[in-house]
Image (cartoon, rainbow, N blue to C red; front, side):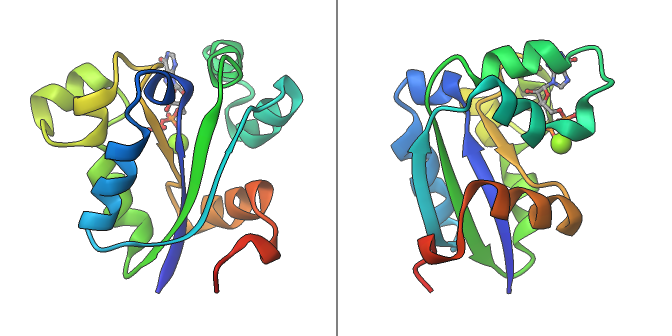
Length: 141
Ligand code: IDP
Ligand code: MG
């Protein structure tokens, strides 16, 4: 069993897609073991995305991720990290609509920045991201 973090981003929360996205992961067989809504501060968003600090889109990403509330879930399942990445689709929502039309980014994303959802991309990132957002008493098991 593996754990991974997803964050439903401000664009998707704002358009009312939170329930549909969570339901998709339930239908795909994942167990939700942590769930919360919150709003990132700029400092928190910068730290969460610290691996991207030298990328040209870093400040745009921080602005976007702090523009409204987000909903984070810890999902548990076999090969959860890679399976969830598959379900969310490629980073660019337009590309997702061409190559993975049933992916979450194809269905709810707008472009490469406003792409509806974050998911941990490796065991290393899950191990950084899950305790960044959740403390141990917030898990249901
Ligand atoms: P990922 O979310 O598919 O793992 P990353 O390359 O890790 O994609 O980028 C993190 C996030 O930064 C993306 O989900 C997206 O919101 C944003 N981002 C990535 N590339 C661009 C870009 O070229 N312009 C604007 N925002 C971007
Ligand atoms: Mg990434």
